[in-house]
Image 1 (cartoon, rainbow, N blue to C red):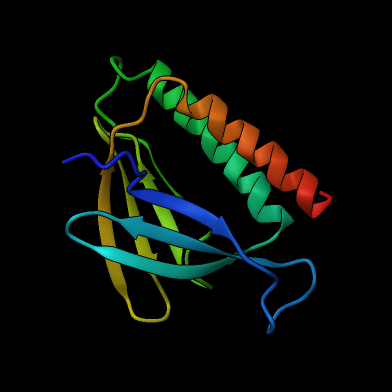
Image 2: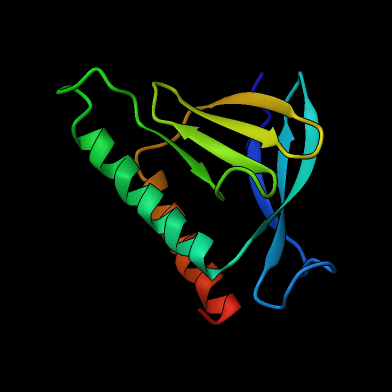
Length: 134
């Protein structure tokens, strides 16, 4: 059943109380008939550059989809220091949400993205940079 809600979204939050002013926190929210979860993650200006590179790599992967058997996979923000997403350019697209290094729980969410999703993601990246002043 489709409720009209996005199964996965990222919501802004204030800066981490434990981190520098250059770092921000956000909530990764999953809502479905099977699982409802929210996990906090942190990012900085360098992570936004990594997100831009990830979007470029996804676009290249989509353009080469019929030419290779390899499936593009990329994580954001970088693994190891906070919860993160792993984007897998399959059909349908899949996003894995990893609550590492905290609980070690992962959730795999298939997402039926529309053709224009990449443009929308770039627009949100520009808006995030503007809000953060980077």
